[in-house]
Image (cartoon, rainbow over all chains, first blue to last red; front, side):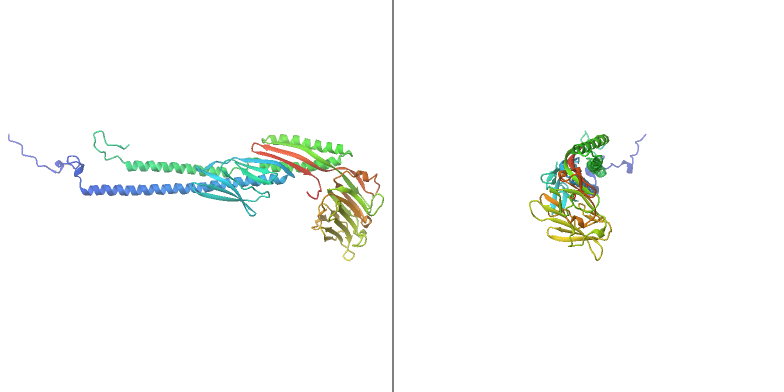
Length: 169
Length: 315
């Protein structure tokens, strides 16, 4: 028997890219393709993360603003209730009203300030991060002392000697 | 899960997916932050729906209820009066103690603790004349009702017939509050206008004169409430401009016919003897009563005084 004729190498017998010749043998077009894919993916991801982060930041600011408004209304309500009691009796000897309120709104601290501008009285609430300020108008017959306290439980006290309401923490 | 490091044989892996992994992590953090923000929003809604929890509203309602009940008790104490200050004081003290006992049980069911007690009473004298002209017991036309007083309440005059009233300037009927230590006096006169046949109530206070006119045939004049014929008379504020104690006088008492009654804040019963028909009479009465009220809850401490003086012109 003679030797078998040599096999003709077909398509299936060619060395595979990356297997026998290694990844370094890939074409330049493949590298560019990979780079572009990576860049586009990074761009999309960055945009997604930025948009989501902005959405969360906006939502948080809105929540802080709403919560400060609610807390401001509660403080104003307690001031009006205290005013009503102070004015009700012929001589109010002492009056203390305590209102439990959250010390933080959406994870940030805030301050409560009472302010009198002419005949108008205001309760101003300010959060530092995000920077949000909310003002609630109060109408009381008894003057309100101008004070500033950190957010949290609020105590409204009537001072008979000065005939005024004071807000303290 | 994708590998973050090369394989153990040193070959790089082509399925690490670090970018997707980091992105997923960041998005997870964002979602957690969003959840926390939403939680705050829900808490805000919860906070917004909370009603008054300190009890201030209940305290105000309780104060009004006590004021009303104490007023009734004060008036009833005089109805069942045993004609002495001791009895009057016992009546009002017992009544307030009764209100306190009942209200304490009711409020305790809500966790609120009230307390009521009579702090003080001021002895006074009720003076009245039920018919005839407004002269004194000795038939004097000009006479002194009470001296050195600082308060009058429930002062009402009923004009029996307006045709009996003198005209202005012709011995007109007057009530005068004359300061003991000098100063502006307050004067009220009641006359009839002959032309219009109206009852004219004129008030001279702080140097100025003003009047109210009514066409009622038999008007009631509530001097301390400032009404004539059940309608407000802006000119009339009893003892306006009078400072310090004053003497209450009647001038030209025969210039009017009807009845009157008032309570002064002093014991002046020594001025009057046994009253006959048409003469002024007096009897012990409490001028006012001060009630101490305490109302406490877990978040409220309220202490006040409630003054009961029916018909007081300051009240």
